[in-house]
Image 1: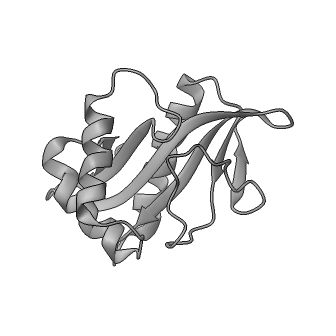
Image 2: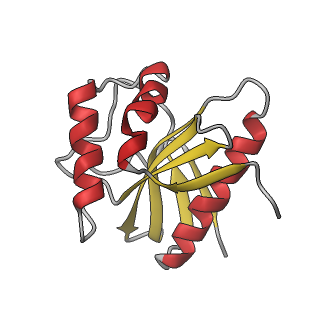
Length: 147
């Protein structure tokens, strides 16, 4: 199925443009902290307990239309799942298309990482994911089973 959007891990040239979406969504993170998180994700050779990947959705004109932060996690009750503490899209004309493209990408990443589900946390801008490894907010958000 052809898509009008390219979804891939964030590139250095996209950091500033992606921050515009993060800022517009009301996330409580400043530009310097965002740059550090993205730079660390770009330089990382091994997964981190905080951020495994930052994925962006870009349209054909180079505008960032969506962003997700994802990492594989494990829970005794749910097993291995893909945690998505940040999932934001911005499109005046094709929100569904952007969302579908990002969800297809997340599904592929979850399957690559042998996850049985995707957990997309409820969006609360002032509750940015903490680097201290705090547990995901499993009580809120939505679990999407993959099998």
